[in-house]
Length: 211
Image: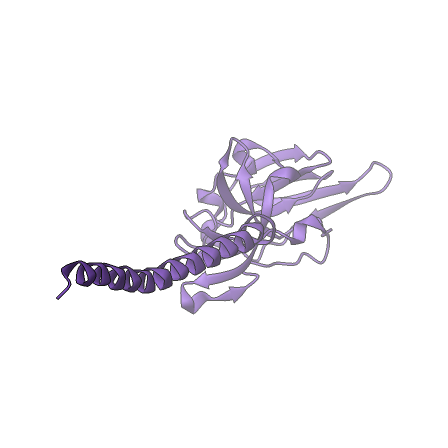
């Protein structure tokens, strides 16, 4: 018997077995790391430039949107087109851009908007060619209508936004017009709850005066 040879042989066999076990594990970890890095690199541009998730919090958009509903926000469309009247938009709150709100666009840049006992009228155009529109708002129920009296003129990059639940919404009536640069996007999909899954939820096209 040769104890030195047996010891050396045993050590060599153990090291070889360890390498055979270690190598596949490290290879697997490396593959998963690469997958995760690639997924992050793909998802970040989508998250910041194309679409992002948004969860509704609060009653300001009842009955169109309710607390807890999960939305996918389209960040791409408004890079190529201007928001229209009636669009529901997600935006950074002017007084705290880290907080995001969801409201509906009521007034467009350059317009003068008047709210009389909760009913909206809009004056657009200049002194030589102006027109007045009494806005129909089928997305508001009588129980969600307010009785405000407001008049405001909008600048060239300003929008007037309000919640569909006018009695419980902090919006342009409270903190003023919304600048175009603060608009993040529009709801593209409502994914939750499942019974309310919808494409372009809250969409309303004002055929009389949208641009």
